[in-house]
Image (cartoon, rainbow, N blue to C red; front, top):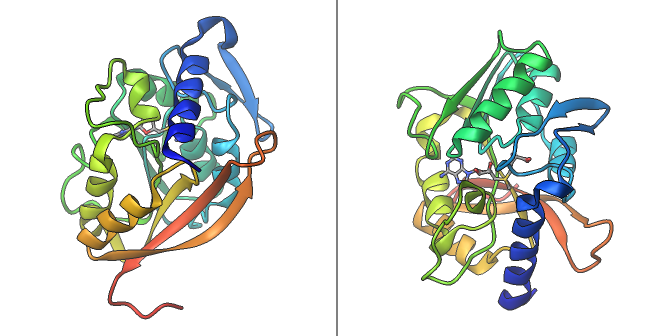
Length: 233
Ligand SMILES: C[S@@+](CC[C@H](N)C(=O)[O-])C[C@H]1O[C@@H](n2cnc3c(N)ncnc32)[C@H](O)[C@@H]1O
């Protein structure tokens, strides 16, 4: 997809998310009801949350880290799918509050920790997980772009600085044999992602891909990262 069309799609999604009249205070996804606060990425305005939630491998009895939990659907799903320990992080303080509410609503506060964090910054260096996941802000805007609202962080990553940090520091937070997963799209800049992965000593493979149900040229993807020197499976 062209850079221009990706950017247009990104701004359309931002506009829909910012339109308070189009947002309900609650929504249902995967048969479960959730709260939605204003200023938080809505899991019902595009299908990515539901698609990634279905694809993700939730380690039974294991640990799961979600970077950018938003309203908390995927972290709640991880806990209800058998993960013993889930940590949900977000740079957006309202998203942190939103995830806390949904964790309480679904009775999983005993095993889900929710923290305000820029990428991994709120974690101790030695805290490790079996799965680390981010449904990323994959639209790459021009370099003069500024995050005017917290919602902008849900969609745009200028220069892929956040993708670089997600990949560069992942090794500090993965158990041996742990899996590093990214929810991505053909609206992202795959060449730049390949470059930042290479800078972090990683390469990626695509585990899943599915089209947007209404926009035939949009595809959602689940990517897994491996050490660049590990033989491909
Ligand atoms: C595409 S939204 C996905 C939200 C949620 N996981 C979902 O699937 O509905 C991306 C999320 O990443 C968060 N995010 C972006 N940059 C971040 C950073 N540097 N640290 C933590 N979270 C970040 C955004 O605030 C947003 O909630």
